[in-house]
Length: 157
Ligand code: SF4
Image (cartoon, rainbow, N blue to C red; front, side, top):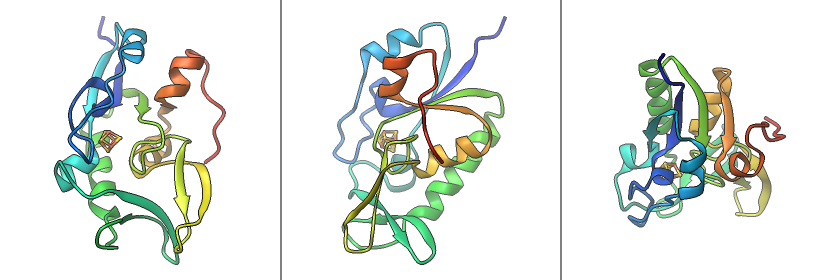
């Protein structure tokens, strides 16, 4: 019998793909996912390399966008394209585990700011997580999954 496929932020598995070249390896999380087929992703490293400048989600006139903290450029489009193609390559993903608070991977923990960098919300979805949710995949922030497994976290859109 084939194992359930789980999409997971690569940094949680130990890939050194964070903006500063570090990782977020989470042994406790990985222990809870034994028996699943883990398929890692990192939209930011794929699109912008590692190391790279940080980005934040900003509520703009065009909607919520990932904006570079270095240049102010809108970095959203390549990340959204990566997310779409990832789920097209893996149409049978059954669960998504994202790194908490990431503007790409956070499921219901991403922070959104206004254009003056005032915090508007800290329970939004990052760009990749949003694509997963739109496809009806069960999505969890890593910390919630560890705490509440197997119940899904309470999370708005
Ligand atoms: S949180 Fe997501 S985008 Fe950031 S390093 Fe981890 S996998 Fe990459």
